[in-house]
Length: 145
Ligand code: DQA
Image (cartoon, rainbow, N blue to C red; front, side):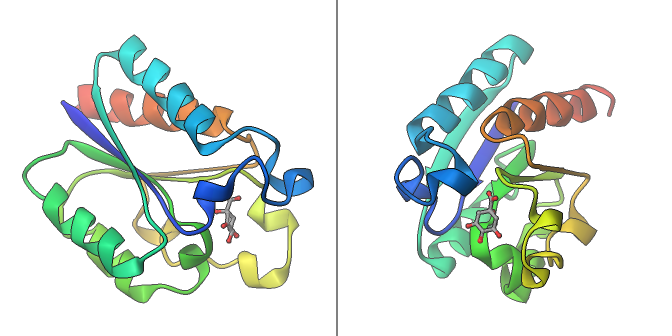
């Protein structure tokens, strides 16, 4: 099975972006963690990042019928985008939501997620290790179906 890893806006700047909040690891490091986990559990990984909401939504549409599950860090769209949350149900596959930081411990506007109600799991505050957990819990769900 193929799992799609989607990273949203500003995550291409990981490593230099607010390291006190997000750590010093880069997006490439985060993707490498996910790739290692995918290899361990025997799933194919396709990893993408964009700063453009429409591009992200197009990728989610293309996932329908082609991928078994989605891991997504929606970045700021977590808290703003009904459109992305609407798109994420279209492929009809399990979605795991990941945040590097513990969004519940941050500003109130980060406490609400449009994605969490449609996610099968939410991982926050584990840094890039969250991508490892996300792949593993998704693979577990896929093997139990
Ligand atoms: C984030 C948390 C969001 O609130 C923020 O807008 C991000 C990154 C995280 O990974 O901790 O861009 O999704």
